[in-house]
Image (cartoon, rainbow, N blue to C red; front, side, top):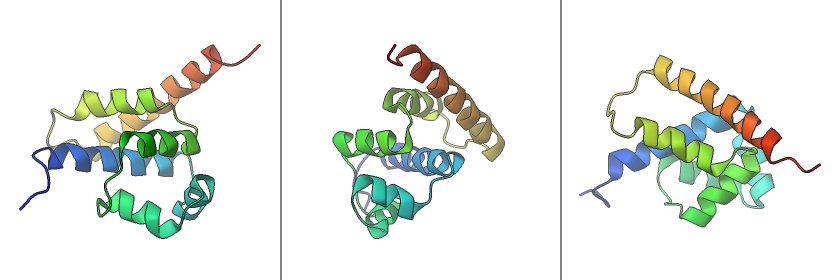
Length: 110
């Protein structure tokens, strides 16, 4: 029995989070250090063994240096597609990284 009616959506979000982590070249160990937790915790989150709440999601994004809103936009863009190709996802991750950089520049102090 599934834990939620939105299981596919949650798996997509987890996949995006992991792909973004890999795109910014941060290992689970490095992410765990930034979050002040263990690699096991990060692994369980990414595999869906431990559900993360919105505050944890924001902390995860901040630890990656990625705007949580930008990643959520990417998720919302793809959630209606149950089968997203790896190529399409890679293109979307690249676009996310560009949007994230633009947003960081716009909100940079000074």
